[in-house]
Length: 178
Image (cartoon, rainbow, N blue to C red; front, side):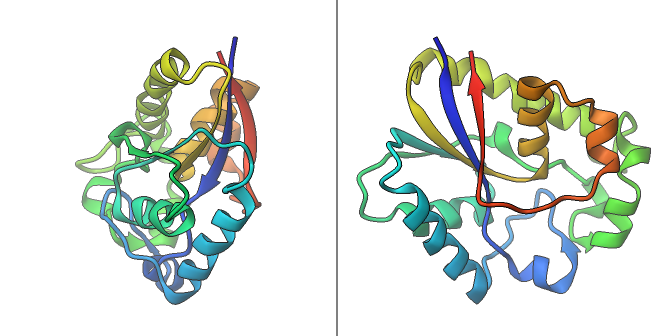
């Protein structure tokens, strides 16, 4: 028994374009992000998806609402799918936050959480997903921490390797949970 998860990152935001690391701030999609979200919907709305799960942060919610509007596919929000909480660094320049990722694998960002803590939070979502959506195909729209949780738990990629690597965007990743 398992659930097939198609992970997609939230669409491009105003903060992404400005080089800011949004973290736990809501964020807002840019004009290009609206187009990204619509393209995501075109890719996934007829892909056998039973449900869509998003982080409850504004940029992920906005992505899902644009991508799956009018489809009848339920869109469910879960705080556990949030990005790493950068604490006092939420909204700081990407270079400041991401250049220090390795330093914050186990040590929380000032007033926030560590990457290991963020991954543990996201993985608690997995057990609940399998209970209700066994044998289903679902989309999860999230952030770097969300994807790293899938990579770590499903594919066994060490967190040390994930925090040291550059993020490379693609049109979704597939994982099996359960």
